[in-house]
Length: 328
Ligand SMILES: Cc1cc2nc3c(=O)[nH]c(=O)nc-3n(C[C@H](O)[C@H](O)[C@H](O)COP(=O)(O)O)c2cc1C
Image (cartoon, rainbow, N blue to C red):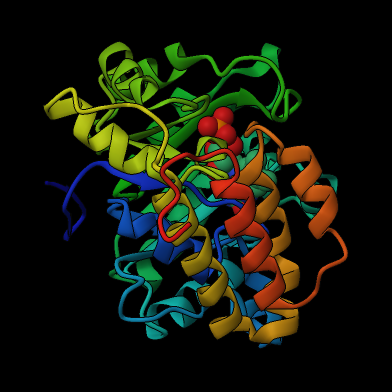
């Protein structure tokens, strides 16, 4: 159990926001393996207040998809505040501001990690949102803009003093993007500096990294990002390895098949057959990465657009070479 503001969460293992990836279907899958909080993809505050269909689609949720953190990006306090009110009315359980995205398109507008360069703007944004919503309010930051300007502690302190309920830290610099190692020492520094919960992110590839980060940094919760691609079981394994030292082995073929199938069905339910299949393709590649014969399988399904054919090919691939394949 842990709390962010008034929001109670059943454990401290979260699914990190990933644009283009953490849609409703994937969130439901990782929740079934124990993730207690999932984040939406980042949503443009401007887009929300202009009611663009895409922004609203990113907020789509369901009763199984709770509690949901809605992540907004923007640079203007008043626009972000209005967008937060819209997210609040649409039922977001928590509102998070993206201060870590290093993508050019986002940086150019003064949003995302660009905000790390402007602590006073960060303060003004948190203040404006604090007035606009009573939902739990968090920010997700990087360690700083560049190695010469590591300021996560300063930004976290400012956000706390303006009323943020937690701070998530991905301790790479904006210039580093996703390369190199995440410097968990920065998470530790932030944890020492603030009294609101600190959520750690960065290089949680294996279940045991979760305990590793918690032990090293003292952070209150962690969020898994790339380590969950094609591997939603990581949540279950991290949760059980903490308590019982339960098996850390790969999922059984039948578990793998069942999960991939369920993920595809959900993608189609929420997006329709065409978009659902298209969106699912990258997940299918991740689900089969590193498995024997994976490359051949991926090549063979590249052009397949029919759900039934994909599921049949998947089944054959997963059970090929399996002496215990059920039903022959
Ligand atoms: C493809 C991709 C998309 C991402 N999109 C977002 C995003 O929309 N908002 C955000 O705050 N972080 C985003 N992130 C960053 C992750 O949430 C996470 O902090 C980062 O990947 C570090 O964790 P990892 O090293 O375990 O992957 C994204 C990362 C990846 C790889």
